[in-house]
Image (cartoon, rainbow, N blue to C red; front, side, top):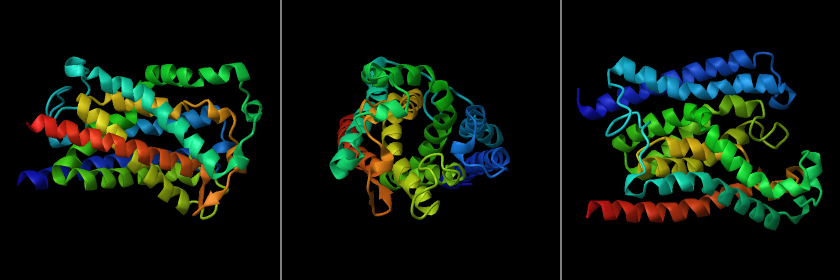
Length: 295
């Protein structure tokens, strides 16, 4: 068997495990048909345990294909941590970038739809005005500490899927294809309103499409910090900080008051545009780093 065919087989096995186990978990967990907002916090946490399956699938795929379980180095599980050769920079970026693109996205959302500004929106989400400025710091700290949970996804997507895709095709299509796969994996949760709610035009198909687009944009950043650091931990940290919502402006923006443009709320459209801007900067830096490494 040639090497490329072998890598395709390994990737397919991984995806079969990842989608099969996660979809089974999601469907069993939400079998009563309730939406995300209708669930108790305990039930939401139970459903969210499905995010562990990409990493579990990584381990199962390596065991089944006899790839070995080296923690660090070439063709490894990328679980090692090294700060040599200024790799600490990518851990720092993982902590700070979510605040940058989230806050920028909120600014863009306000420019697209000034009506979504609400000077007292923080009251509805039960946050003291004095604590708003601490939200980014809180997200960074709790995200960094809680990155072990996000490792459940990143240990699979960035630790196994993306290295395989980058071996099988050029970087650009690999990033796009990988983002689409990651977005489709979220489909059961998107269908119960986890990411975008349920009250929007084209539900749930527009939501699934938007999730794929978001995952492409996010996947570029997550793959960048993984490849440059040689570890999935920066991606796990970035994922966790992102999920923690590092933004001061979140306390002043009511998403329900925003406009809908091309079937997407200005809240999410602002974030997509923000991610595109940050992605372009990162891709330029990434290209320069690769050229420098080839010299």
